[in-house]
Length: 94
Image: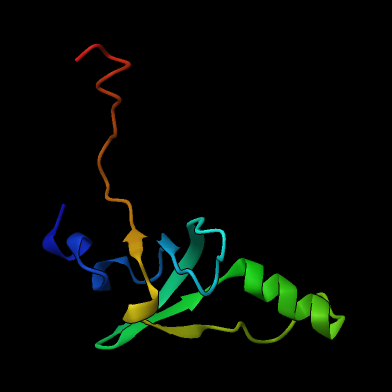
């Protein structure tokens, strides 16, 4: 595992889970693809948003994908995955 896996920059191109209240009023974390990291926030792609936009436009596909800039003040938390196994200590009796 390298140090970049502990930074948002190390997660660019991967799917993350984040809780963004303006995106999810019921406070449920959503999946996003992280496209970029800036000093003020994150560039995110959402399949749910893409589906809604395509539906609203009455089309099934588009030549480009929408990514949105979300300022950090609108993000409650981000969850990423690192390349190592996860174990349930409780299930293993540890």
